[in-house]
Length: 400
Ligand SMILES: Cc1cc2nc3c(=O)[nH]c(=O)nc-3n(C[C@H](O)[C@H](O)[C@H](O)COP(=O)(O)OP(=O)(O)OC[C@H]3O[C@@H](n4cnc5c(N)ncnc54)[C@H](O)[C@@H]3O)c2cc1C
Image (cartoon, rainbow, N blue to C red):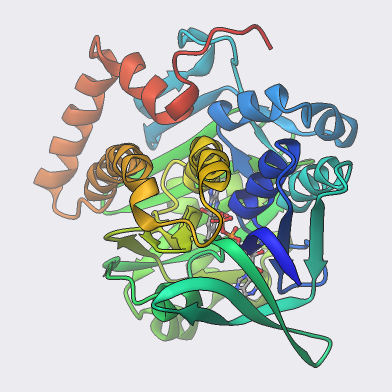
């Protein structure tokens, strides 16, 4: 089989890339290892910048048909003392809210839209296994589907396999990986009736919880434990864990006592960040989590992954017009340079917040309080938030 472009991975980056290329009449295939689009506890909050993109692409009506929660605020409290808040209504952009909805619905809507184009192909249950190289250039991929070893030749492989990317290794990319000093436990509970809207970060002394209202009427809650402390946490029992969370947010006690009855109701997550030095080889480029895995703080992974795809599009379509075989890596230098600026802006912001959240001594906690209150009043607050939440579409003005 021959294709102009092969995308490995049908997550937010890969599926959007597929749709964008399909719209430009590019002969494109997406290989996705899973047979279903089902995902749990992944990227349910889509930042306003990506919502704006989805509206521009005409994907939004399918999301409205399903339903979602509008996310207009991010708030940070030290117990009941407000430290910081952002209200998207106050940001100078026509898209006034992010959304929270199950990621499979978003992926399905992107896929359905792309399937309107006969030049788009989606192969589910297709696991990428190896790169095909000639003269050190990538010219295709091998994959497994229903027990068969198959291959597809192409001018460009786009790696959008997510955080555990095999392409990173097979492409010999240099990766800087950093493990966080703590692990994260996530769980989901029904939302109490009087719950206020907005994504909430609550801190208290050396501990904190992140609480995200989740479609249709749940809260996703994340809290840190010490690195490798899962066994110790479990030994103390689930009720000690509930006490730890409720010491910070007492309103979670009833839903937690009813719904978090064993560790099976929770998910342990290892947090790491990873940054690939150079994202391209001849015939191959990485985007999304494969190129840069960010921390979950402020839910920016999907936003950045989708914006990678959006920004990459003209480089690919121009390259396809001017090259008859593997697209050379140097075509993408400018793209990589620009995207790395945005990625490092977001990851530096997240690292500063992580430092604030991991404050442990009383002095550090006081400094955190003062810093966040000052940031809340700072004249540049909304400018920084706009850049973070809207990225490449920050200066667009089309009413949506
Ligand atoms: C617990 C958690 C919560 C998060 N919450 C948020 C949030 O609220 N908001 C937000 O913006 N971000 C969030 N993120 C981050 C976000 O999920 C990712 O940044 C985003 O999904 C990256 O998109 P992607 O397309 O690059 O990769 P992925 O979403 O990981 O997609 C990769 C795809 O590639 C497929 N694949 C993998 N290997 C192969 C292979 N060998 N062959 C074929 N296919 C393959 C996978 O099945 C998958 O479908 C969260 C992450 C975690 C872990």
